[in-house]
Length: 112
Image (cartoon, rainbow, N blue to C red; front, side, top):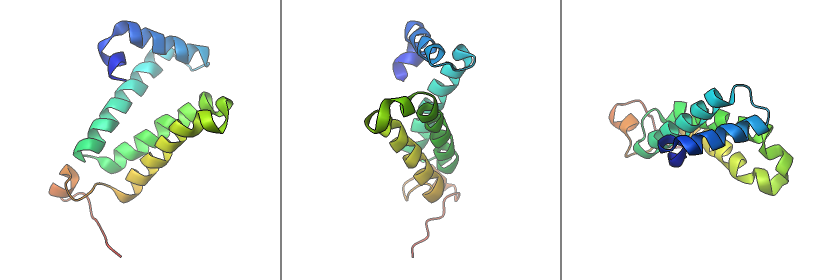
């Protein structure tokens, strides 16, 4: 993903990949996906906006499963499907104890 951000050539390769899989407006979709993945990853690491980042992650990779990976079978779809599930997990449970969300009081951890 980082290579797509810093290299115009790699971004064009990703645009071509999306075009080959019949995505609408591959240049726009490539940038949206790459920057969404970067920002979601950053959000997960620092724990800022974790629930929203989880939803964005789940949506981004659900589209990947539906448009590309479903054709690859269970093994081929496993990585993107796992990211959908991790996104939904973070959207559900929110950030952890050592997160920016927790410091800002936006993450409530309830114990059973």
